[in-house]
Length: 117
Image (cartoon, rainbow, N blue to C red; front, side, top):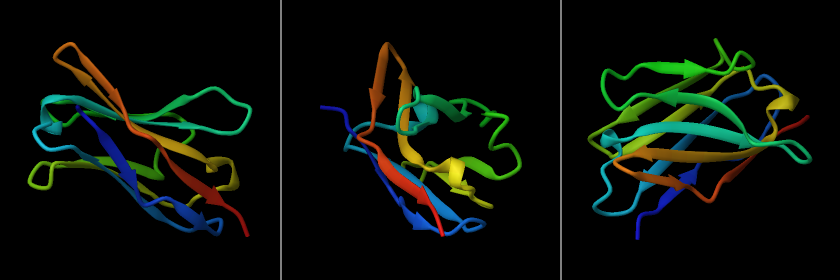
């Protein structure tokens, strides 16, 4: 069974940084898939944060995180990361990793990010 596992969430002060990581279960090669990070805050719909293409490494970001967040792949480690800098209280949410391609789509279980002083 294909699984994605996020890690790296936690509590951080405004202006701080966190690095989220998404790892795949054995046999699931992330570089073959379009990878995205989504987030869902309490009482709000899940929203797309960042996407990286399977070929060429092209990236796309929500306007609210442009210039602060960076999505990238580490194919050697078979992971996708989200570097989050200059965090704001409104970035507080559960962050989910998502893979799509080859007639397959998979969500991770999510990791909580809380930005608060």
